[in-house]
Amino acid sequence: MTAPFLEKLRAALEAGTFVKVTLSEPRDAAGDLRNVYGRVVELREGRFLSLLWRYARRDETKNVPLAEAPAAVEELLATTFARAHLFTTTGVFRWQPDRPIKASRPTFTMAPAAEHDRPKTSALHRAPFLVALGVTNAAGEARPGMADKLRQIERFVELLGHLIADSPLRAAREVRVVDLGSGKGYLTFAAGAWFRGQNVAARVTGVEARAELVAASNRIAQENAVAGLDFVAGTIAEFAPSERIDVLLALHACDTATDDAIHLGIRAGAGLIVTAPCCHQEVRPRVVVPAVVEPIWRHGILAERSAEVLTDALRALLLEIHGYKASVFEFISPEHTSKNVIIAAQRREHPRDPVPLRARLRELMAFHGIHEQRLARLLGELE
Image 1 (cartoon, rainbow, N blue to C red):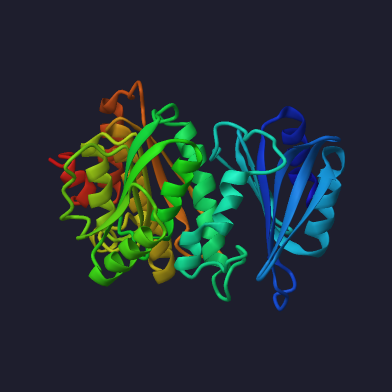
Image 2: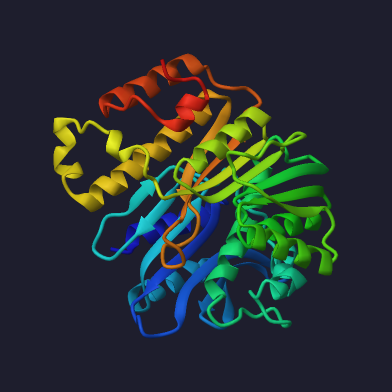
């Protein structure tokens, strides 16, 4: 049943709405091939679909003429992969064998410019901070066991570029970035590198509760002469910025720490808020399960997933109420990390009317019998 998916691919390439295609879940689980990633590139001979084969320790690239691209993808789906995602500016389309195509709202609002090379992204492979953090060797190759982390960093940089382009910060030449729960600093360093690559002056602060990680990150920043980057010790709830925040990041902030981060971003009027929630624990025990959905919630794993979906839906709706355009989407393929949902929010230049949105929030909470949710409480949305 690849024909409908391939027709979507063909139409997107012809209409100029194509963003990217990813093929994953190799049928040979014992091999070291991870996935294939496709993007449009402009070469001297014309436009091609550049297919990047990603193995555990190496990458290989093959450029296919656009007219031949659907056939090339068809062969890969028939012989090598069991899942595919097509990203276009009109929607996201998911394919699996013997299942109908699943369509969802678009993740990207504009197609990337076709180009042969992306030096700003690929330059991360040779970034000294990646060597110092133990992600790559001096040649830019992933160290053993770090290939997934390198791809996560690459995906984050790509995602950051798309989100900035669709935010009030798209023309900014100076930004203030805060990364809450920065951990070892992988994405904090990467965010600073991306902005520098765009000739944007960025002052980036990583906030991390573990003092030893803060000390190590500051040492690496100093040893590699990374300007405008520092790390401070503290929790998300305790952090009190002394100046504006333009970009707020909080990847894998546990449970209600994500709510604290979103609240801080809204309060600071950040142009872009990017969170990757995890460890959803607050809402599930507070749900009064409606009878009609009891068959879902009676199973532990389904109840857990439903609570996660409900929590993140409430967060996205609260962001909309408070003047943001919110979207929820997959960060990176699940085989690389189980914590792969992003809530991204760009501040609207013309906010939506909050009255009907508040009514929808109350209806959603009432249907599930919820009377308390941290972000709603912080934003004063609970009666």
